[in-house]
Image (cartoon, rainbow, N blue to C red; front, top):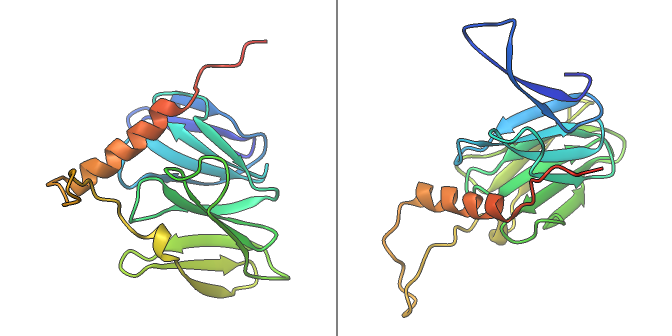
Length: 186
């Protein structure tokens, strides 16, 4: 909503909210579900923040202050813990939460006089596309550390048989279990 609330709605009863998620203080610009984990989604807002949510908890699991209004967010198709966000000051912020839960791995200013409004990962190639409010589109190549998949290995260093989707779900579950989601007491 423009007030910063996220409402989970029922398809059967349009006038009723199943859940309300409270965390933003200004209008929400985008919400994206994690392509690997069915409970996890991101939201971004004019309040300068990106929030990570678990659909079973109505407060954010994590919050990232990007220092400017956030126009869009996108999850990586390569990893359950990698996402990018674009801001009104022309910057792209890319996080890998499995590596660092507090700082982006990459923060780059890509336009000078425009606000970035859209971001999308390429599903086939290691690229990121960003768009601005003046109609410009910029293609960015991802660094190798943002597109490699860490596969489980045995003591000798051989890759262990595994389900790649389950590996990504387990990686996000580990991140969620490490987060403090207890409400703040006044």
